[in-house]
Amino acid sequence: MFASLKSIGAYVPSKTLTNKELEKIVDTSDEWIRQRTGIQNRHIAEKDETTSDMAYKAAEVAIQRSGIKKEQIDAIICATITPDFFCMPSTACVVADKLGIKNSTAFDISAACSGFVYALSIAKAFIESGMKKNVLIIGAEKLSAIVDYTDRTTCVLFGDGAGAAVISADDDKKRSILDVHTSSDGAYQDFLITPGGGAKHPCSTDVIEKNMQFLKMKGNETFKLAVNTLTKDVREILKKNSLTSDDIDFFIPHQANFRIIDAVGKKLKFPHEKIVLTVAKYGNTSAASIPMAINDWYEKGKLKNGDLMLLDTFGGGLTWGSALVNFNQS
Ligand code: UT7
Image (cartoon, rainbow, N blue to C red):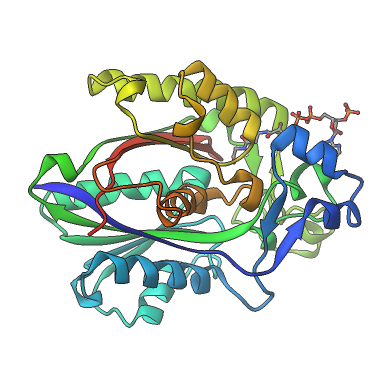
């Protein structure tokens, strides 16, 4: 039995935060942000809109497009670094409740921007082992909740949103997820970190006074590692599967920075029309970035059944991963 991506869905909050608006908040400029990142806009959730609200809306779209009934879903995996609740309950359990799904396995995974690809690998393993038949995987983030809007080196980069996919058992390899590769190196744990609020530095006035509850990033160092790791990872998964860049219909990288995507695309010799780009309008939405990008391409009518997608991601941990996925919307 193979695992197949049956459907994609996404949700984007309606409120936007443009570069021009950021100019009024921190010492930055539209020109700097565009030149250094390619970002023009990002979407921001309402104050009372949670990660699970966005995840639920993305999941509703994916389930409806999959043609399966909610009660057929036997696992829900939510990749997020901005869960509704610290520790418990998991966002996946909250989403299950909103969807009205009972008795399903439900849990969150923490792999930062690589979360969706990690979730895909778990769904594939669940299905190929025969343990599950229909797995709902979600990448959802309310990054505005952990972004420090006084820190210009990070606040211009991130946005909110959610993407979801239904992964189901299928007997045809041509419709399946061909391969998923995931990896990590904890030696770089301080490159992308939210230092406060966990068990190491529990929430306290000291943590708040030092702004330790917010996301911090060593941008420059992360940039260099991202380009090299993303490129190496793609070369490895293509080689392992006896494929070349020419066999790929769409390259769908994590949307952190246009310059990273452009550098990786050039090294791998992907023509522009094969590279899926959403970073200009959504910014970096961490675990939601890849499913939101797939959904964007699908809704534009560019992605057709039978297209072979190459997903490639890199983020906090550090974590990274890639996947070869046949698009197969029901
Ligand atoms: O999603 C997980 C993976 N994340 C990534 O892969 C992100 C990787 N990093 C990046 O995308 C880039 O490193 C950034 C966009 C974060 C920064 O771009 P950069 O070209 O690496 O800039 P930099 O950090 O080298 O800073 C260059 C200058 C500095 O000023 P000085 O020291 O040269 O005077 C910064 O202070 O730009 C300054 N700067 C800004 N200026 C205006 C930093 N942020 C801003 C800003 N507006 N928002």
